Length: 75
Image 1 (spheres, rainbow, N blue to C red):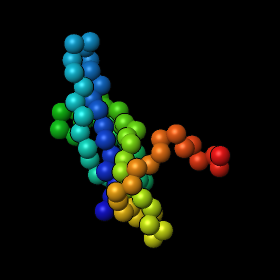
Image 2 (image 1 turned 120 degrees about the vertical axis):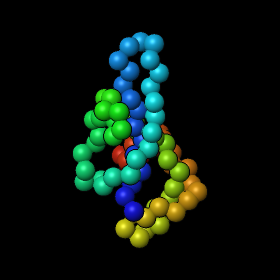
Image 3 (image 1 turned 180 degrees about the vertical axis):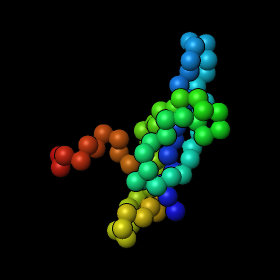
Image 4 (image 1 turned 90 degrees about the vertical axis):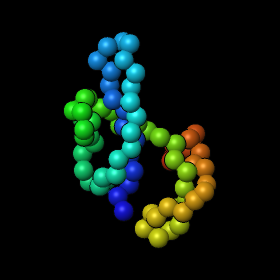
């Protein structure tokens, strides 16, 4: 199953509220630039996801909280 990505519409006016949505697509696919239904511009969000790597080709098994302060620098 492809990963789940979170996106948000980019408001065209200051009083417009962004709309968040999730969509599954391949990691090899480029990030969306438009909402699939409305065509409104979107940006992909970096989300704090829950999961743990099981050691089987990066499959997720949860729950576990990923530490957002970890930057992968071996510190």
